[in-house]
Amino acid sequence: MTTDTHITAPTRFVEADGIRYAYRRFGAGTGTPLVFLQHFRGGLDHWDPSVIDGLAAGRPVILFDNAGVASSSGETPDTVEAMADHVATFVNALGLTQVDVLGFSIGGFVAQAFTLRHPHLVRRLVLVGTGPRNGEPLSDRRVLQVASNPVPTLDDFLFLFFAPSETGRAAGKAFWERRHQRTDQDPPSSLQSAQAQTAALLEWHQPRGERYAELRTIDQPTLVVNGNDDVMVPTVNSFTLSQHIPNAQLIIYPDSGHGSQFQYPELFVTHTRLFLEGDQRPL
Image 1 (cartoon, one colour):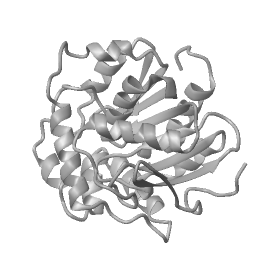
Image 2 (cartoon, rainbow, N blue to C red; image 1 turned 90 degrees about the vertical axis):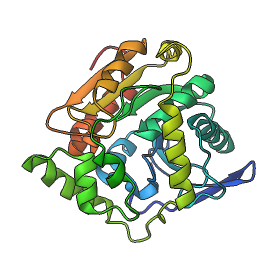
Image 3 (cartoon, one colour; image 1 turned 120 degrees about the vertical axis):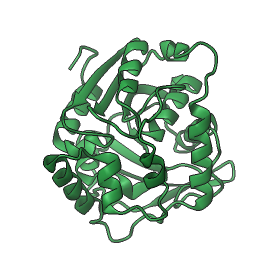
């Protein structure tokens, strides 16, 4: 097992097809690596150290900046499918034959596309705060404005990721402190990356053939997680994922929102480890 943690792991780079991908790999020396795919504009330091270190105790974990995001070179593509192909290029460049994948928010869209387009590379799938293609749209238009703020503040994160209750806000502030512990932070994503990801989000919400049909072709065991009131990707989308992916199971955390895994980090780590390390029986 390595001695590095999310706070101390060095940022590394691997080059493939003209892109220099930034990543951090740490955790146990054996086991199927778990690749993390991040939310809108998020980079290596937008993960919760409690979640990452908790999961790294039993397996290698790999945090990843997709093309054009934060420390990675190139331009961010404007479709989810192109982003998924970059994930495949990155995984192949590391010489990995199979990985587990955890996708959060837009990272969950990319995780689905990656699994559909490169199924031989995926063993198990964790989808957090996310939804299917052409899923139900958000209803609070303030979300778009807040999510687009040039420099997201604590109040922005509290509104977008956490329940408005006293407990939810306290959990959000604790998360904010944890994620700022590292001194050499990944740089913010560029305007180009934000614009391309916005275009990809808009395209993802367009219909393509029979609604949800492609989900039925995902045969990997899948864990779907969300809070009971997600203002970014409405929670009903998590039910849709669990209904249409054949080997899916669903966990909804109470009094929580888009970042439920950051509000309940210890519980999320326990549930995810049981799913990744156990058999396919429900948790």
